[in-house]
Length: 146
Image 1 (tube, rainbow, N blue to C red):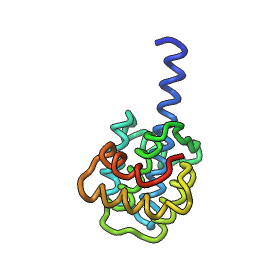
Image 2: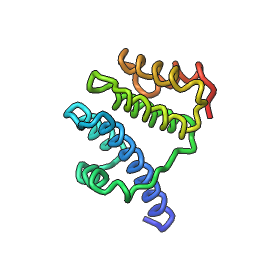
Image 3: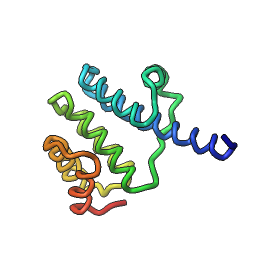
Image 4: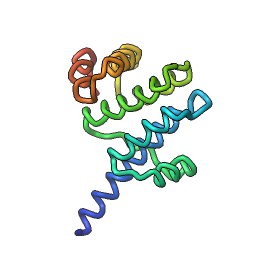
């Protein structure tokens, strides 16, 4: 592995850890971290090459992880999809979870006036069993993308 590959892999890991930290924040927004949230977190972490031990480290030391927002529109939406999924996975959407989800969507560059619609449409697609790509194709046409 060359030096360039090392830095690219390190950058990819840092972005993944940032996403995991955001998901942990979402899971904890309602005051508890239930098993459905933890299982979803581990599925997403594995998809990004993050081990359970790394997830535990991010949870224990969140200050070590810097917020990194993907430059790519689709990757940003895929992260938002995961955040919405984390918000709804336990069957209850608490006000603080929805507010945090809106905050993330705003940080991702989505227009403030579209946040409720974007989050609700994404949640409905998830509930219908649509994956990241299907939801992106259905939802993104309804809003202005950053």
